Image 1: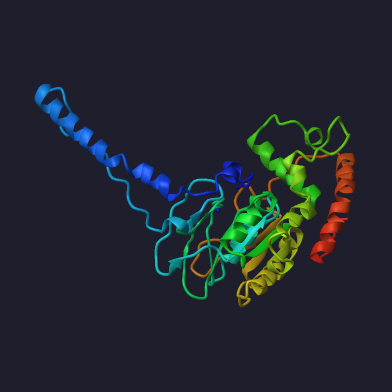
Image 2: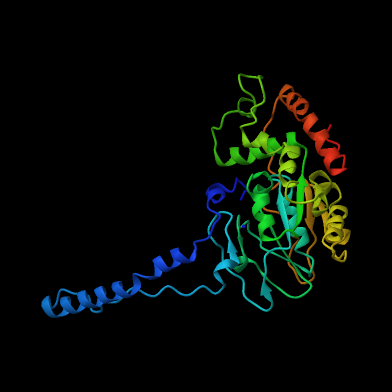
Length: 332
């Protein structure tokens, strides 16, 4: 089905090619082959010594391994397909958001469960051919944090399967925005200051056009999803508690997915250097597993006045989000 950025060009490119387009693409093969053979013969007889040794017709395009309707695009190009026993299915559960909330950590923790099969990358579109093979009783999952903030995603995911379970990892929107900025700054040195991007005219109105700010308007994004899915299809995971109590939060997710609580506190240890929990090494493994260098990067210093202004801005949105979800995340 990103980075985490939006769905990019996929937002307007969700429809697969229809039968007519497929026929148009296939039709030229026979004439092209004839032309190639004719030119090859002409070259060999009329221009001896100046032609390639072999004139080849274009190689035929392999037939798709899945029926045409098996793929419903939501964005970027494909990824390698896993092979093995079982069958590929559309995901029954999705981690749909949010960026810099802890979605990668949650996915890695869940992949410890023997009944969870998940794509490690963010595909940014639904394609059953990209999903890992699963056996009966196993759950297919994937995560793409940009889904939660993409206007078209709820309708298209509902069209894929109205029974999909949806997991949203949320984090204090102020610290999430600063973390988002830190990630962008690491890739784009010389970026304007956080303050300059978060506010218009110094400390004027908050600039909600900036994605780092806009993502934190959780209540608005959830309103869009509730047009298609009931609240019972959602589980909201605290990004803060995923750090302080990973076993507790992962336990809630396992309950939500109808799985036995296999992943427990015995799987985690807190890495003081990185500042977040890591996975203890499995039996036969050489070393513990921690998220990569891009996780837990230091945040740039943001003036306290900027932080306080943003907290005040988000407060009404946070309170509405608490009411909608029935959970107080303690951000105020």
